[in-house]
Length: 201
Image (tube, rainbow, N blue to C red; front, side, top):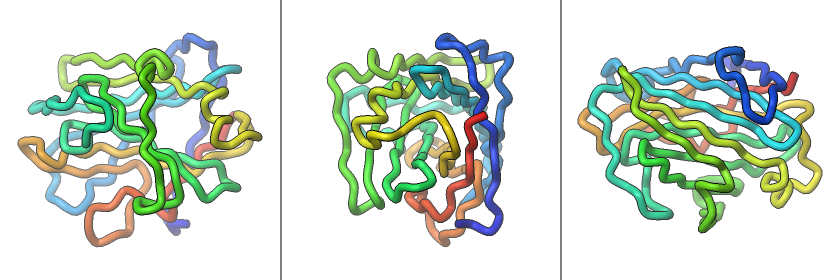
């Protein structure tokens, strides 16, 4: 685990969260390229049935080309949440662009993982995206029933190892940001050693 590991508390909330009451973390680590002024933030909470995620970007030149399943949304303006239980070596990467097009993978590493396709993804995850005065945001939920398909004993207790990212490989200004610092010399978000710790309150 990264020696500069950050920590965060995920509070309990209602099934429809009051996001104004949920603390916001800053995705403030500018990585690999000069700072181009783009910023990102995240809010996380959980209810009895779901882990709720709301991410937002401060970004002027938004790229939103992809709409088809399994598209490389990391080439668009993209917000990403990678996470895993503390006692498991497999992690999810949940990536989303301003069109609400998700890219979801699960496995041990970039090379050893499966990409998941759900015809009902937007309904299952309740994906919502919108433009904002200074950028865009995305909100979705990760149902407990879905997470238990991969981790049968999963519950909203203990901690997750996780990181939050902002990128845009083919945007007007290529950029990479993270919540917890990344130690690789070249762009690579698929590094659980660089995840921080998020604890369920």
